Length: 246
Image (tube, rainbow, N blue to C red):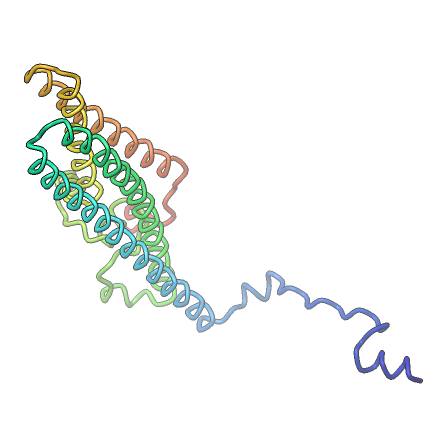
C-alpha cells in the first residue's frame, strides 16, 4: 500500500508518459493567416533588434578605435615636446603606434562582420515583407522598403540612393570601414617612416618607406574586404528577385 501510494504521488514505477507528438505537415500547412502573421511579425521584430545591435557595435568599435588613436597622438605630441623629437620619441612611437594599428585592424575586421550581420538581417526583413504581400497584396503601395532580396532590393532597404554604380561607390567611400581602412594605412605608413628614420635613412628614403607602408596596408585591407564579400556572395541565391515583379 505504501509503495503504491508513493508511486501514485511521485510517478515512480509508473509507465513513462508518452512524449507529445510533433505537429505533422498537414497541421503546419493548415496554419491560419493570423498565426502566420504573428510568426512573421515576431521574426521581423527579432531581426530589427539584431540589426540595431549590429549598428551599436559598429559605432562603439569605431569610437573606441578613434579614441585610442587620438590618445596615442596626444601622447606622441607630449613625448615629442619633452624629447625634442629625439631618440625617446622614435622609441615611444614604435611602441604605441603598432598598438593603435592592431586595434584599427581588429576594428576593421569586426566592422566587416557587423556589416555582414546587417545585410543578413535586411535580407530576412525583405523576405518577410514579401510574405506580408502574399498575405495582403493590396498593401504593396504602403511599403517604403523593398520586398525583394536581390542586391537592388537590399540597397533600397539599406538606404542607398538610386543611381547605380555611382551610388554604391559613394556608399562604400563614406562607410565606416573605409574610414578605418584609410586611418590604418596612414598609421602603417607613419610606422614605416619612423622605422626608416630610426635606421638612418635619407629624407627621400623615409618618404618612400612611408608611402610603401601606406600602399601595402591599403592593398591588404582591400584584398581582405574583397575576399570576405566574395565568400559571402558565393552561396547566396535570392528567393524574391526584383525582376520577377516586372
